[in-house]
Image (cartoon, rainbow, N blue to C red; front, side):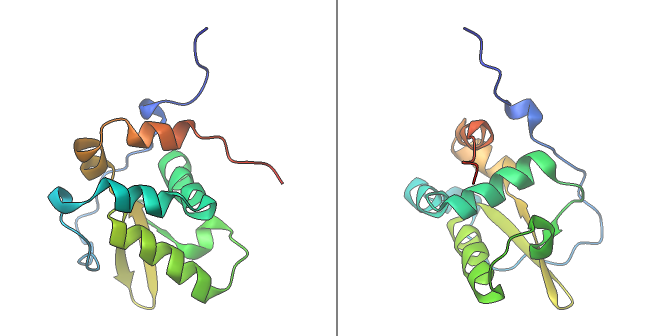
Length: 126
């Protein structure tokens, strides 16, 4: 039976603007470790964040508010930092806000098929 789940072609890739701030500290692409990525993605909220960025992005990168998460700012900061330090997302500082994007090219090169699994994941309904 053919799968009806989204595939890599469903991942939204937008052109990079020319005037981006430098990214916050992150691991180099060739040092990203699978166990760190899987650890970061093991939390359902973080997995949902990455999936939403892959499938629904409207801009090059997004603020924490765009995700519509009903969590304290300190909790969200922790989750986004975990994703960045694992090498899953790239964050940039725009004044007082941080914006995030998935490191699609880096992750596809390092772990082919991983982002397809994230896209194919079906979040539980509450």
